[in-house]
Amino acid sequence: MQNPWMEEAASLTDVLELDREIVAVTFTNDEVTATGKKMWICRALKQAAAGESFVIDRETSGCGGGSWHCGFSEPPTGPAARALQHFLTRGEKLTHSIVSFQRMVGLTAPPPTGLSERLIIEPAKGASRRPDMFVFVCNPEQACRLVWLDIYWDGIPPAVELAGSLCHSAISYPAVTGRTNLTLGDWTARRMQKFESDVVFLTVPYERVGNLLAAVPESSAGTAPVEMPGGGRLTGDIP
Image 1 (cartoon, rainbow, N blue to C red):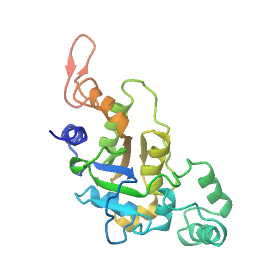
Image 2 (cartoon, rainbow, N blue to C red; image 1 turned 120 degrees about the horizontal axis):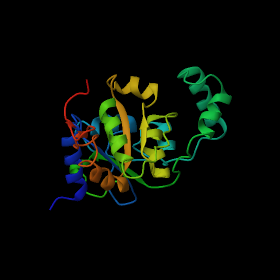
Image 3 (cartoon, one colour; image 1 turned 120 degrees about the vertical axis):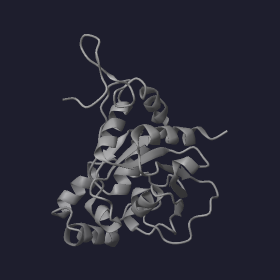
């Protein structure tokens, strides 16, 4: 028998007509051999959506920012913090000043510092252990449907966090809050990893996946037809 997340991933892939793999992300302290080469976490997300698997730890994380945001290292202090301030404001030029950079960091969820020894990023259909989250590398229409399926039962809108790095908004924020998150990623990650212009990132904590799937036959964001006044049904495009 397949692990349930494999079947769940297959079902969602079919319903949403996804052309990329759903990515399973798992924090673990288990003895799992890390991928040998250095790997950026944002690149691992892209390549896992294309079918590859990665085990990343502090030594094999190729990006200092990714190591910090995913909990492998402490937030930078002293000279390292000054270097980061300079890079963000004068190198990447993603925020105007060290004050605006501080606001961006201070007003977002904290990183999961010290949470685990390793991070597994792999296609959900082949995940050997229960994931902590599903990451959908998808288009806006698919993300829209996922959001509405996610809120179908309780109607509580997601508290979306857009700012910060892709690894923060797509992995760390859902991990520390348990919230579904929709993000565009950060411009540097999109440019460096050559994500397609129509790609967005929708992360669902795994504990929410069951209710999301249960909404599929009930919601028009899934497979339920729209019911029109007078008992008619609308199954095609709304004119």
